[in-house]
Length: 353
Image (cartoon, rainbow, N blue to C red):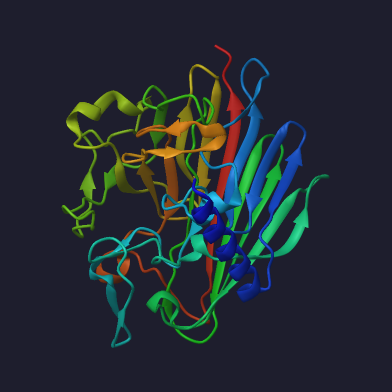
């Protein structure tokens, strides 16, 4: 990275500090040999350390070595994405008779809340306990009326907490302060259970507890239909390798699955890396999950390792994409009377055989 670019990044970080009054930092929460590091820039998970079947500790999330690289990131590594994850068609929507025009940053569409969405703001550290029986960090952000084109003031928070045994809880909350507004937050960590620098994840076994998808058009916008996965490459109702059906796809997975369960905390997905023995099981209160296999990723990451396509899997629990433009999808609108709540629970374990 050139000296000029480094200086520009340093200037931008200093500007963010001055504008928000919140210093950008790195915060660790730890429980035994289980450790998670978070930065309040974008409320991002930047590392997750835990042992493999041989007891060797490894970092299982993709990312960078420095905060400056996260400031310049375009892949949403580890970020809380909002106000609205995924795409909004035409960068516009109508709510209560008013047309809202957003900032387009994906062709004619808006993706992940716009170019200055929640992944590119400095969050306030409101609560922090590094270790002890209940390690956690709570980050908060006040999004102002009109930010990135969205209506109303909004108070958002995310709490990362460690539980026994090897459990990571992610709780996202949001409250509209004065206007109805769409909210669809997601946690956008890139997982590689073999280790962030272990290559592709195509041999990982995955199971997704969903019998339908929301099909997309050529611009990755939902058509509004809900289609069964049976006899398609999207069927992961039984565990199988992520790459087992790649020949039937144009470019990996980037698709939303409505979850089958009606439980409050729904079984969502399980991923198993045979080489390390690590298993990750996910539950959520959200109605759906986006499966993304880092299809276009080419980035120099931690330790100078160059990440390639399919070197991670993202499991982004969420509301349905572009729900503001599809009346048949579950609503993602929140009001001052009806706040937003979204929990993810990651449980890590080991298979030694």
